[in-house]
Length: 380
Ligand code: ADP
Ligand code: MG
Image (tube, rainbow, N blue to C red; front, side, top):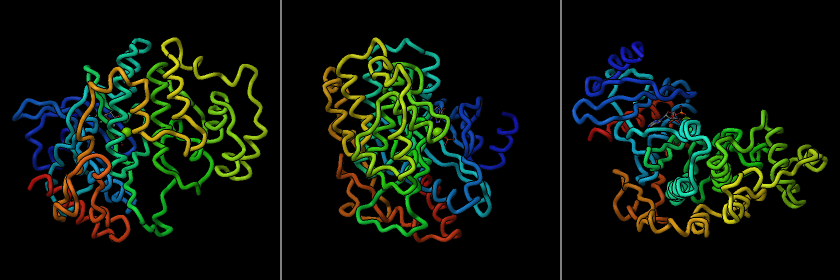
């Protein structure tokens, strides 16, 4: 921690505004620490993203994350309060993003609460997660890494989606050059849908997030990840053992020949396929089983949309509590007029493609400038 505080003081202009006191998260790209805002006394979470300019891919990934966070405002999406100003704007490697602080991520909450979440809590958490992802999908943002570690919670069961490090925006008619094809190396393995387990060329859609949400839904009941494969093929085997094999059409369209053969010849263990009811346990009623089994459909086109999930009878008792008129709001970009970008709600809240032009056109130097501009926007 001392080393971190030292680094923090050296790196950013606003270091005296915050007192860091605890490391709360470590990930592949950096560290997250808790701090107090000296002026307001408010707790914040500061994510230090390391080596942002190490490669073009790293910079692009960071830019996607900070732009999506600036443009999407929703009660179930974590708020990026600001990005701290580098002490030396001509030469810096790390970004410091300041977020509203949340008490737990879902992984740590499940560890603490194992077996003690009641049905009301589960449906409230699930519904808010769906609301958050609905706001993203309305803005054509695919999260692509939904898992308990990326779902933040407060003690009162407020839910916020975080970590947009693997997210992407899909613009209609977007023609991507081969170097910018969507990578299939997304979604942490246990939450990865079957179409991404074995087929590098599969063109996926928003239903990949629905699969991950289905896995998380079950985990809220069991406290344990549902499909724990130790590699991609084992992941498929684990899925088959729980929900059975896919039909011929899915086999033909979704998988390359080698995998198709593997699945077709797969012999389920004696006591499998385990049915969902047994996997979920005594809290699962018929509506839970119905919704989970739809979200975990082999065929991506048979999975309900996030909106359809929210309309499911399982949420009838709580829907009104969380109903909002304005599910998603994308802020108008400073570079576009109101009429072009629209600050509307729901499905009309698409993000401005100009914000994401860096994806296809920018050089290393230009990307550096876009990051600097993005920091400046928080200090305007
Ligand atoms: P990474 O890309 O390293 O996974 P995340 O944004 O997911 O970065 O943050 C890593 C971890 O830090 C999360 O899993 C969570 O435990 C913690 N964390 C992140 N943001 C917050 C926050 N706003 N409040 C509390 N904890 C947070
Ligand atoms: Mg994460």
